[in-house]
Length: 220
Image: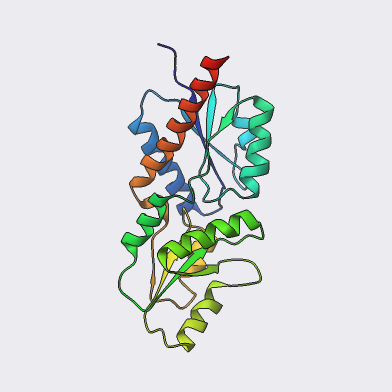
């Protein structure tokens, strides 16, 4: 039997030692679940190796450990994949599994704020708005000029909210995640990669793309 395509997980990258460890742990759990796979890790920013350096040929499925099809997916990863004739799966988000993961962690309260990293990319922002709508949450960003998390929380307090939960739409700890704990909410949910179900999501992205790749090859 021929060896299955390698799985190259591609994360954003962070300077946070805790965040780095969380991403490595997620990828290690994926590898343990599928010991027959060659599972590797690369990044689009901050850390090494970068995705273009980690791709060594077409027999690879790239799985972006990212929460939306923003710039890094559409440009950085897409260009690297095209240059090496590899294939890329969709990013992890948005996905019903992520929505359910957040929903399980949100307790009773007056208001929920979905806190994402922040981007001016319209596709990215539309994805975040869609997740927030499913949760009945208010959108806020950890960076950027508008809808900053502390400002949204302050507005909700002024409107009478007494218990506010920040649903962290972030995969791992880092600068943005730490800032959520200083934003004035009563509860901040853990990073998403701590949820064991993320392994299922990564592998489902890989499996679907592998099936599509196999079908395409058979049609040649």
